[in-house]
Image 1 (cartoon, rainbow, N blue to C red):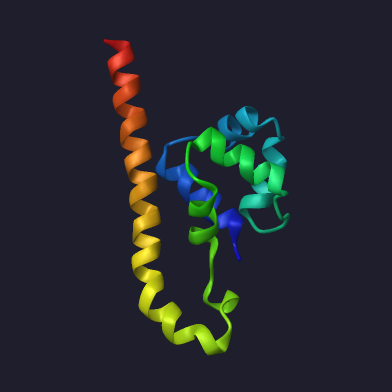
Image 2: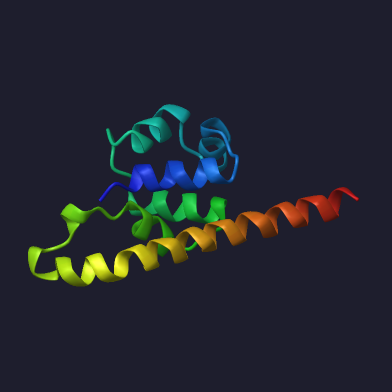
Length: 110
């Protein structure tokens, strides 16, 4: 499970810097960098806060952080068949959330 990769992917897709996300989550930028680079595993509290700030369901981070090595050998066939679609759905959720946030920001500025 690579939750740091998932957090970085969502953060970048939303155009948020490490510093901005760390600040909004009340953690240091160094700590967020360590999480994103797999040096430090985020606590459940940190994951929850990151998801609140990014406005994505926690399940999206877990789905995007899932790796093939996380799946038991006996389930590889099902994983190979379903995971690409599940991952694409999670990415669409992130994309849709980002688009809605941009539309809201644009409407507020007008």
